Image (cartoon, rainbow, N blue to C red; front, side, top):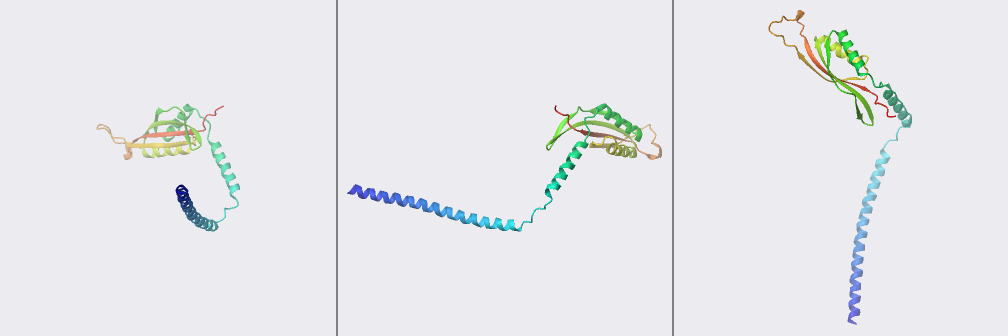
Length: 190
């Protein structure tokens, strides 16, 4: 009989422990349910206040993609480095500056976002007056090489040595170092 009472007591204690655990879990889930219901109400209210998206999104997206393709296809194919240098030197003659390509780097391919571009970089030493330099830089940026980017420019005044006469009309010659890059379409991988 003692063992029977002991088993009943143990069974009651075990049932109370299980009931306690289940009850606490139920209360916890009930509180989480109230919090989620409150969140759902707030989100529904916020969604009701949002304006409807414009109906012309698809045509606008198609127009933007077409514009992107047009711009992407307007990039020239890979150009001849010698022709690029010759074009720059012709512009220098037109602008009456002395230009010397000091450093030319080999063509590289760089990725910007999802697209790659071939890039030809070179450094040019230029000597002339300020007005001539401005004209040269302007013609470089707006001339035949449409995808030319001026990456860096540094200008210094030419210091006269002690036996030279000053230039006529007080015009001071300057030296400039230009770092330019020409972007083209990447080589096709066939």
